[in-house]
Structure formats: structure tokens, C-alpha cells
Image (cartoon, rainbow, N blue to C red; front, top):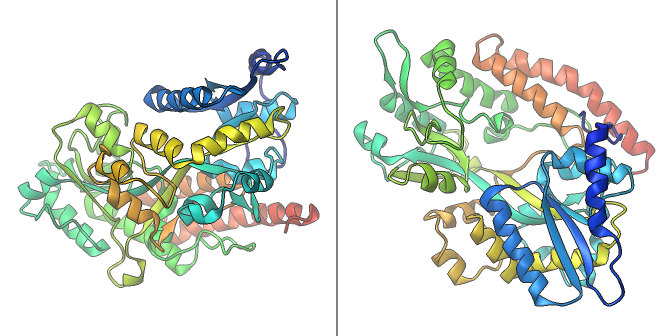
Length: 442
């Protein structure tokens, strides 16, 4: 599905029938019974189980509303279809990166008035997380389980290479130097252990732009990924391909196992340093409890001290789709989650940080992640950045990923690759902004 096209996706009949069947859960109850709220969520496993516990706590706290939470695969497409068909859930969870697209598609209700009625204010939140739900000045979503990204590193491999495990790299130059010392190569040059690979895990290829002070767009109407500072980050990434060989990196990466498995490149100790989110602790505790690891801010360019403590902002959000039958009741549950009690129950259960400024001493003291304070502090960094608020972000990100692959395979220079991305995306951004202006939203 192309994002930002202002069209709701046309999916298969089977999907539509499944959504219609689920609609039976939200028909009006008989007089005297609770109002039933259907809540769609994309989580599975322990993350979904944690939200179920929060739902149960809310349901027990009052006798007017009953929230029924459903785990829905492919939630984004199914939600858009349900909304366009007039049979949406009462509320749903989304990735923060999807909020702008849903707002552009007029698939979400603004929450400003409901938030005001419940006394929910921006200053209750860490700014980066509250801002994720704002699109062109309107509140469309509130955060629930946020995350920041840090450098995770293998302390044992540091010691083995003669490095101080209490002093992780702070700059790009230190990262390269330490990676060189840790990297182990075979007789034919193949990589057996890598100190660092820009391609691992490959989830935020776009981050190399802001990490080096660049911009993905100018916030008005121009794609800027091919500007000097933007390209510099991709030049840094390509330096690893030049150093170790593009083929060697691709071969080693091809041998890595699934992320959520003992064969994960970091968990199997095939890569010593990676950029990962606060959730990485969950997988360390599941698949390699004996791993001796540390976490630190992502390194900055050596000549840019103003870019210290960078991080990627990630979050899941709660929102109310257009056409919700019980928006006020749905928001009562959202407000419950936004309370310190509800939020800490959810975020502690998922082993993440809270988006709220105020957290209990117990939340930090009892948090299973020993580096939770680092991830919380990073959320306040002036160099914290998330994806741009563009309804065409999915398409833009796909272009960046393809260009990044070409860069790491030495098929293009970073400047060539990003010039190509800008040339393809600028007309699409022009059309996108034109449509918003015609709708009076710019």
C-alpha cells in the first residue's frame, strides 16, 4: 500500500468478512449492561498479554465500560479498510510512524477536546513522545509504550580485544577504531566476528542522516537527504564496506539468524556493537542470559560535539478511528492508560520506559532493564529524532532502504544514491503538499 495517497486500501473480501464478524462484538448492549469497547492491537506474545492485564485492571476499576482487546495481524491495512467501510473498532493501537498517514487519510478522530476534558496536558509528557501524536497542530494519538535507541555492546568482546568495557565509543572515529580491534577475519578475509556493521539490524537506515546533522526534509516542501550533512552519514556507513569488503559484510549478514532467536547477530556474539532499542533487554533475557552487555548513547561525529547523545524515538500510540461508536468511553480507557498507575503497569510489563515526565521511584528501582535510566535520559536529548511527519513516509523510507543497500554494496556513491532518492521523492512530496494545501491543511 502506498502511503499518503489519501485513499483507503482495497483489501480482499476475506479480510472484510473477518472485520465484519468482529463488529458483532461492539453492538449496543442491552439497557443496564456495560458499554463494550472493541480495541484492536497489533501486539502478540508477552506484549499483548501485558496490555490484557491493563485492560482487566481498567474493567475491574468501574462498572460502566468493558474493553475487549483483540490482537489483529496486519492491523494497519485492516483498520483502514474497516474505517472506510464504516465498521471500525472503537479504538486501536498504532505505530507512531503511522499516525500522520492515518490523519492524512482522515481515518482518526482529533483527541484535543477529549484530552482537555480528562485533564491531559502536554507538560505531563516527555516532549518527544507527546509530539508524536500531533499532526499539523491537532492531537490524534497519545503514547503508550515508547522506546529510545542506544548502542548495545558486548563487554566480553571488548575485553578480549584489549578495550575497556566501561568506555564504549563516543564518536564515529572511536567506533571505527574499536570495531577494527574487535573484528576477527578468516584467512580469506571473511568476517568471523564484526566489531560493528551499519547494516545490522538495518531497521533505521534513515538514521545515518540525522546522526551526522542532516535532514530528511526541510519541514516545508523540500527533500534534503542529498545535502552535504545528510550524505555524510551514509559516507560513514559506506566506509565499513570499503574497510571490510561489501561482499564479506553481505556474506556474514546472510548467515545471521532471526532477530528473536539465539542466532541473533548480537546474541550469538557475531557482532559486538549494534544500535538497538530498550526492548533488546527482553531478547537478551530470553535467549542469552549469560551475555555480558552494556549500553551507551550512539556515537556522534568527532567534529560535532553539538550532536552528542543522539537517539531514535520510537513509540506505540493509542487512537480513536473515525466512525468509532463509543469514542468517549474508548477515551476513558485511553485516559486510564495515560495515568501514572496504568502507564507504569503497561511499560513495566513490556520492559520499556514511560512517556510520562513523572515516574515512581519503584518504576526505576524495580525495572528489570539495568540500563533503563539511560534510555529514559536519552528521550530528553535535544538530539532525539523520529521519522518525519509525512504521509508518504513509507514510500520515502523504502527509497532510502534501497539506496542504502546500493551504498553498502558499493554500487553507488552516497551522493549518487541520495541524489537519486531526492529526484524520485521530490515530485511525490510536491504532489503531497499540493493536496494538503487544496484541503486547507497547510
